[in-house]
Amino acid sequence: MHHFHYTNGVLHCEEVAIPEIAAAVGTPFYLYSAATLTQHFRAFDGAFADMPHQTCFAVKSCSNIAILRLFASLGGGADIVSGGELYRALAAGVDPGKIVYSGVGKSAEEIRAALAAGILMLNVESVQELGAIQAVAAELKVQAPVSFRVNPDVDPKTHAYISTGLAKNKFGIPIEEAVQVYLTAREMQNISIIGVSCHIGSQLTEVSPFVESLRKVKRFIGRLAEKGITISILDLGGGLGIRYHQETPPQPAEYAAAIKKEMQGLNCTLILEPGRVLVGNAGILVTKVLYIKAGTKKFIIVDAGMNDLARPSLYGAHHGMLLANREEAATEEADVVGPICETGDFLAREKEVPAARRGDLLAVMSAGAYGFSMSSNYNSRPRVAEVLAHGAEFHVIRARETCEQLVQGETIPEFLKAK
Ligand SMILES: *Cc1c(COP(=O)(O)O)cnc(C)c1O
Image (cartoon, rainbow, N blue to C red):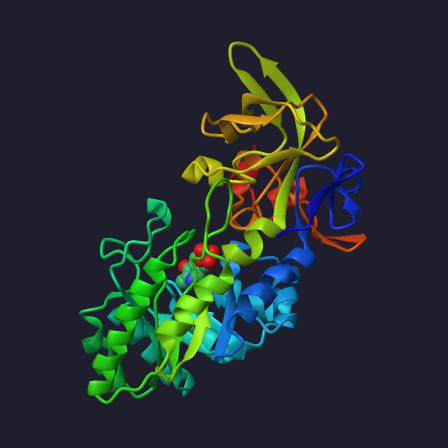
């Protein structure tokens, strides 16, 4: 469900006509619907309402502080993967007691900031990282709440680049070796063991891999219990997929039902780290058609490129496309390409897309997750604006970058200035 629809032949986000936003902020821009974000959060979080749980939004999927605040206002926490994301979550007003910190490469400075903020827990991914956390916690004279991310070796049946729970992936501690790590942690003075976590991948379109890994984690919790280690938090990560094209991912209710069934008898609070499922279909990228090249092959050249939306180039991802300024039923096979000097710079390649004309506004659908947050300044392109629609209003939640900002922090050393 989302709130992007045609009214009088013009694409709207909630009650706002998208061409009006384009006229006010220019193109390209990301556009999110507050009602859709709210609805997605409520559907997901509400599906777990009858059990102790905490939904921690995966900040990396869409990191704007306005979006983080929206989820926080609905009771959401944050799953972070860097000191920068910690900063964002705190700046957005997320309760530190609802922040979990994942990732294989936390630096001592990042660990220090997280412990100082008093976050819920750090999901530890290696024995060396555990040692680093113990050292920082001792220095700060605090107890570091930790869970260990185990790698259950389950195939999530998704794109290879976003599979994380296979033995060959860099993530987590192999589940067979993890009991020993818990025993090591138990002996450490400033470590308090509170949880077990896992996250097997992204854009999963079936429930079975989640159930399979949860079963493995349950058996693992049993083995820990035999050693006298009790776990109060089970963090199942994120990964629930969305419909981009013809996928048929489970609805949150179906996903929740399967998990709740497996959780019976486990005396644990469940943590969930959804990203894509909350924001993916709540955001679009709006770009303008600059030129059409119609030769043996048709190219629609738009003002957004792979630096603005990397997913098509990076994963061969499919994004639906609609015209925003007019409704166009006719489609044609074309490449939708950006201005970047790379052959891999495309938003669609050999796809059926709306028959576009020069000057049309093209809405690249399902771009809310891993869209703006993955964008870069490649080709010295200022990052685009982000806009949040709310009923009949729209708000710029991130201004378009300026060229001054592009060179901010760069300096020409004295020896070069002389000439
Ligand atoms: C990326 C990530 C998520 C979010 O994944 P989605 O597929 O967007 O739900 C959750 N947890 C961890 C540890 C991650 O790395």
